[in-house]
Image 1 (spheres, rainbow, N blue to C red):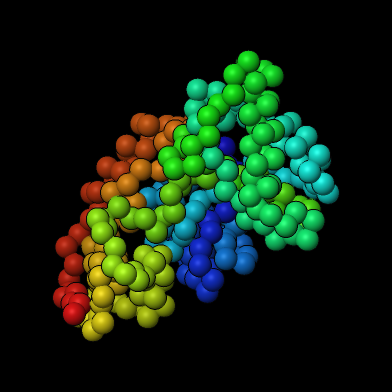
Image 2: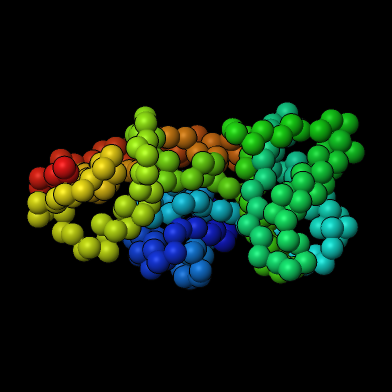
Length: 258
């Protein structure tokens, strides 16, 4: 399989833990950056990252980088990207933006100009514009802006990976599942000693501990953005899920919350 650059985002302070997880999955050229880890891999690894990583929020696949100093440049360079390689006018899309810039100060404006550029490219090529769906799009696009440097990525995760799929209702102030898993890893718990959370609230930390001890993939109960991509390999994805299910074990310890 062809390898390409990937970026796994996380919460501040969990970068090293995430890098360790990526190394265990076989990622190469792992590089810790602010609230994220860069690495290289193929579709096999991209799928497994979404399924197995406990301290990642998103798995992004960069497809284009460029400099833009004003809205006209931004529009032209977004429009130049061959978007029909990634999705069809029959599909819906949404744009998420992360902006750190004195030139472009409003993230919603960057998203709006980018949406117009993508829609106009489809209209001029096919005579029809794809629809925008901010809730459940077929393709979610991530735009990261640092001053005038743009990185355009495909969001392979869809909703954040902290949305495991096991929680039907939230408490008034639930802890983020990624943070809970990170705390457990930082504690260096051996998965054999009795685990106790004496102030468990809605139970997120004990649940994450049970999933870690049982080798239960955090993504086994949800779907992902890459399942709607043009190059989605369903056969490979099913094989990876089957393999992950076969490695689930019964925890050797007691896990308690109160």
